[in-house]
Amino acid sequence: MKAVIVGPSAVTDTLAPVLEQRGVTVIDRVDDNSQSVHAFFEQQKSKPDLVLLFASEDFNETRSMICGLQILLGKPILVLGVARSVSEVVQIMRSGAADFIEMSGDFIFELDESLCRLFDSEKSTRRSGQVISIVSAVGGAGQTAIASNLAVHLAKTKQRSTVLADLKMSGGDAAEQLGLSAKQTIADCPQHADEIHTVLVNTLLEQHKSGLKVVAGPAYLGSHGIVPAKSMKALVSLLAQQHEFVVLDLEDAYHAEQQAAIACSDLVVIVMRLDFPCVLRTKRLIERFEKKEMSNLYVVANNYIKGTSIPENKVESVLKRQISAVIPHEPASVLNGINMGEPAVLEFPRSKFSQAISKLTELLLTTTKPEAANVPASAF
Image (cartoon, rainbow, N blue to C red; front, side):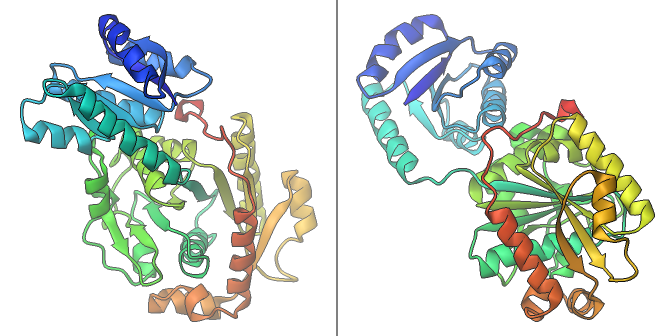
C-alpha cells in the first residue's frame, strides 16, 4: 500500500519507517495547505492508496482539507492529531475521514488498529460505483421516463445497488413518477462541499419498493445555483462510493452544477426524438461533448414511430454516430405507468418499451468502466 503524508516534514521522517514496518510505503509528502495539496495531487499521474493527514489547529481547515482530498482522490484518509473534544472527532469522521488516530495516547497501538481495519476493508470493498448521466438536448424527449425505468430495472431485476438522482433544478418530478413523496430534496444539499457526508446524504434518500433509492428534485420551480458545482461533485462522488450505480437525470449540459455532475460520469446517455429539431440540437450537443474529448457517449432514440420518425440510418449519418438503442413509442405502458406512479418495467414488464429498457441496461452493464473517464468541469 502506497501513502502520501500531508503535514510537516519533521513528522514524516519519524513516521515513514514506522509505516514501512507495517506494509505502507510513503511515496511523498506535501505541506498541509489547500493550494499545495491541490497542486500536488492534480499533477500526480497515479493516486496513492492512502493519505495520512495531520490535523491543523484550525478545526474547520482540517474538515475542508478532508473534503477536498475526498473529491480529488476518493481514497481513505487517516487523520492524526490531538482531539479537543468528542464532537471534533465526530465532525472529522463525518467530513469523510476513514479514521482518527489520537496522538496523545498510545499512538502506535492506535495506528496498528486503524491500519488493520483499513487492510481488512480494502480486501472486501468493491470498486466505486458507476455513474450514468441521462441528458437530452431538448425537452419532452422522455428523458426522465428512461432514467427512472433504467434505474428501477437495475435495482429490481438486476439486483444492483442503485440510486437515482433528479438534478432538474428548475423542478424535477422523477420521485413523483415513481409514486414517492419526498421529505427532502436535492435543494436541501449543503452549499459547502465540506458539509456533505454520509449521514447527511442518507437523509436525502427516499426508498422505492423496487430497492431503488431516490434523491428527489426540488419541489418548487427554483433556479440553478441551488447546489454549487463543488457540492454537486462531492454529492455524486459520495453516492458512487455507497452504490454500484448512480443514475443522474440531468437538466442540461450547460449550467455549472450539471457540468460538475457530467464530470463525475462514466457513461453519458443522450436521449433524443427522431425529428428534425431534436436531431439538430442533439448533433450540437454531441459535438460539444466531442470537443471536450468525452468518450462513452450513448445515443438513445426514444418514442420511435415507424413511418413517422426519421429513419435511423439517416439520423446516424447526420450525427456521425451509431444509435445505441431504439425505444418504441408506447404511451399505453409509459404514460399509464407514470400516471399510476408505477414504472413501466414493473407494471408492464412484457411491453415493448420495457423490453427495450432491458436491452439498454444489458448494453450499459457490458461496458467496462474506464479508469480515467472523468472530465474536469472546467473543460466545459
